[in-house]
Length: 249
Image (cartoon, rainbow, N blue to C red; front, side, top):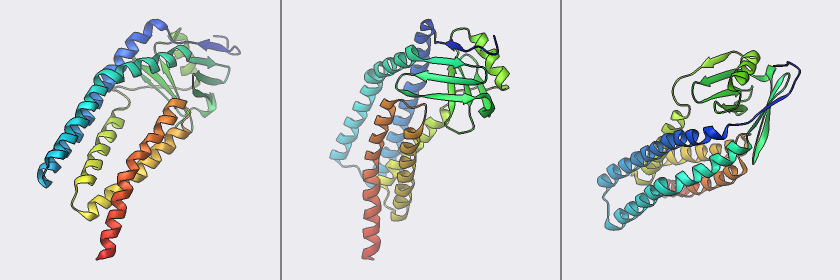
């Protein structure tokens, strides 16, 4: 590769189906895991504090809706979003920089001297990480001229091989968040409920703020993140309920 030239790389259309299947295999079990964790916690707390018929019906309906979403709506939405990102992805490699362009997503520019780490998940993708936590350029291995891209990345910074699936910790955090939310709703302990409500409120606000400022979040993702704030309503209500209880004492 000419050191002074600028090269553009697109993602291979032939690799899209394999990526969709991989994403589906990763996300569907994860969503069912989160659902199962939430249901188990809810069931245990419900048995302890006494389910009534209305609550049982509500829980059954919510569970059915969630399962239907995972089975039917989510795969279609995932495929549509992935196809749009895949078709518009453009990696530009210049003499001293990487530039990633993608539809509905801010351009992300990293100079070679800003790179702090490069991670490769063999068979999956590379992560070129800048000096700011959210400045990460993902390069799927379904990119054209992969070996040429690997040489360019390796010349800019040593590559660290990683095993496993990046994002498992995020799934565990989501499952933990669901468990904490249900525990907050059912808990008879004012101290525990208030502590969980404050922690969840801070986490939700941080998540929305992180998505809004992320250079890898599309406009659709940033808009969707505002819906997280709905979860704040029961948290804030629980905090005021606890404050009212303490003031009456």
